[in-house]
Amino acid sequence: MRTYTLEEIKRDSPAVESSGEQIAFVSVGCVWWTTYREDMGSKQIEIDPVPFPCCPHCGALIMETPLKEFLEAAEKSSTHYGPYGLRAFVAAHHRGGLRGNNWDDITIQIMAGVPLGRRYG
Ligand SMILES: [Zn+2]
Image 1 (cartoon, helix red, strand yellow):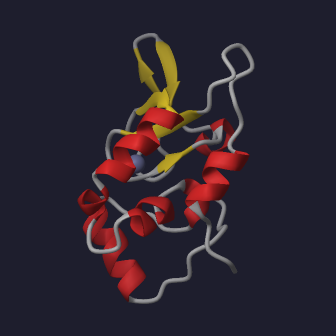
Image 2: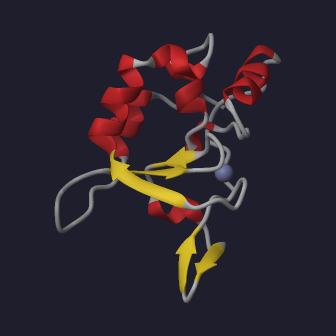
């Protein structure tokens, strides 16, 4: 299994048809994020009376933000993601293969040699 990269995220993530803009979907409850709408799955949270998609890891709400700005902010503050920096950030992408409640969870998995790559679901 090979490691998912930031370049792949930038190059392959789909753009919204109306705006041509790539979107990051970011859990407000953990470090899970994705750039693919379908990765959110079918789990929903109801905020009376409207159902919203929710994080497949922790069930929290998902916020949508332009990918370009999201990645620029991440690259500027890579130490935020722990000693592995952007490697941890990419690993927490849905297709990066790791799940965690916080960046320490991701760091521990990388240190333990948990394989990174495309594990879906
Ligand atoms: Zn979550």
